[in-house]
Length: 134
Image 1 (cartoon, rainbow, N blue to C red):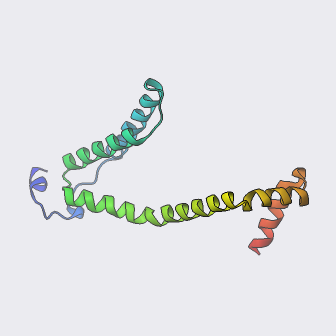
Image 2: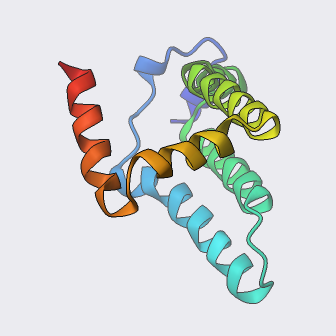
Image 3: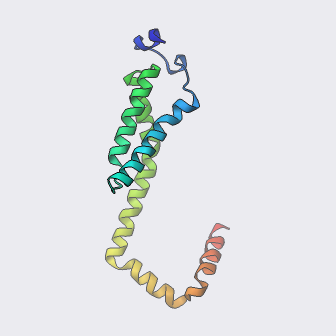
């Protein structure tokens, strides 16, 4: 394994695959850090535990034989895959915020409750969604 670490042009196929326990270890450490932060510090901002989790994952990957370029490529690949979903959530958030400020959502709730009684709301929502699928 030491000769694999020193070669900078190692292909990911040549590196040994980590075991299941080795792969779950960074996730477990990150979750434990989040629990400690919540219980000990009575604060649940996940930034610090996530940063430590990423650093711990990098150290484990480096000890397994991965180079910085391979880890960076993997991290950018994951970001590339998740970015469209994040963009959609941002756009939806902007639209909902604009609708709330302009009064569109409150007016829809007001007139919607005039048209549909609260007792029949779930049934009506199910029927409308079912009708829109066909």
